[in-house]
Image: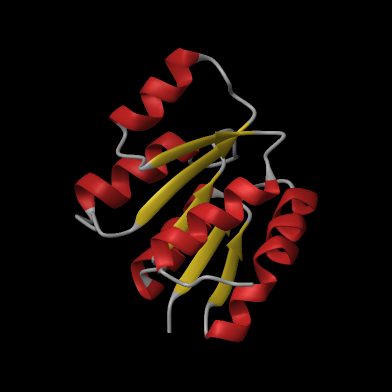
Length: 127
């Protein structure tokens, strides 16, 4: 069963993404969520989700560090990490890519872009 992990310290953003991605549950996708980087790393280690939506500015461990840990320490290069952040500067985008992120989306985000990216990565096309 494919899994998507949503990591954001803002419960409103987490719940919004859960709602947006809910149609994928009908195709067997399990939606997981975490409110900080430490919890996210625990979930990633045990569940190995196919996709992780990852905020940058979070307590305990920031999104860049989570991404680096997943890709370089855990060697889970097959996990598709989407940085989803309010940080829209090019330097932040480059830092995300340098940390191993696969894709970068700034808030406020486009719902269609989120759905398209998940559809492409999981090869599940919802109507």
